[in-house]
Image (tube, rainbow, N blue to C red):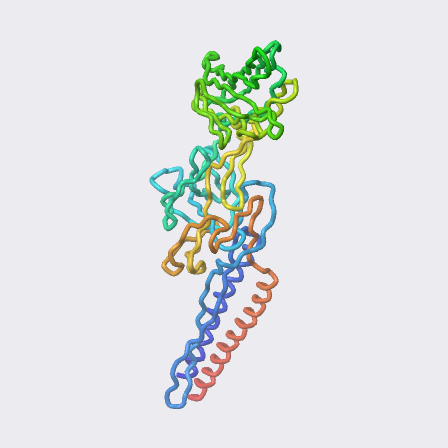
Length: 433
């Protein structure tokens, strides 16, 4: 019985070391595979109880585990949508074949890195056929609130590289100096004109035409002007008219003293804003607050538009897409504007090493890994997302080669045990002769 158990222990040793060699071979073969997580082999002794003073060898058993929580170093690339997770967390992805079929929400898999590029349909797909998943943003760039304990809100990230985009003008600021001498008695009362371009809801260029008409008194100075706004999109119809007066005191000379609405929206003295209804909708115009020289002023004898600003932009072509550290996917246009179109969350689990390992360095949650949660990148326990980067393999080739030598020696030793047992059994057989 004891000799037979020695034979069985030797066979178990061969099997255990063969398992370890298989793991080492897999690790070395994937030493250049981006995002690969090394496999570790552990040996566990098997003990058989002693009986009557004799000892029976139980042998050894090998178990393998993939160290998913160990990360490789990051290397920089030239592709803006090469992504890698720095720290804890995983990128949500799906199989491109499932996305193409379109039968409901695709199944979510997890990975730590990927080289994503747009395919013929605009999806961000890796060379191994993985589609990046994210939460879609609203038209204003805000991301709605989605449930964090399910992947139901995630959608394949789709980039329309031929997309046009324009932003309508909604706010405008006027920094204009009006000639104080034009409101003096005996002046000619010349009307001053100013035209400011704005963009309507379709990205078309239009103009807000502004006229400044001084009130010329019979004597003295009135310090009063009539400001009229017309819209070129409405055939230059009047959309607002205001009577403004200026302070001529030593402390606040030249600043707004009062604004009275004749037509159009009321003037807000706390913000300096007034709202007029342009063809595309309300347009907020800032002319300055009372007593401050940050908007329309009346000084000296010259008309000078010193500061005109507005938001909005004309229609432009998308030039590139980038992903920031917080996972926001931003589209950039040749007009200088940018817009958030998706947010990529980072998925975290209590036990990453308990996940099921699949092809293409992807993983799937399991009962051993625990339930997943979708975090904003750089929030909670998760790290951040690094663009223009890939994660290298977590394999140390030198360490694997050292382990291979150890495994070879252990395998040879177990083979020697079997050879020795065979010789002892032969001697036992020869006793009968």
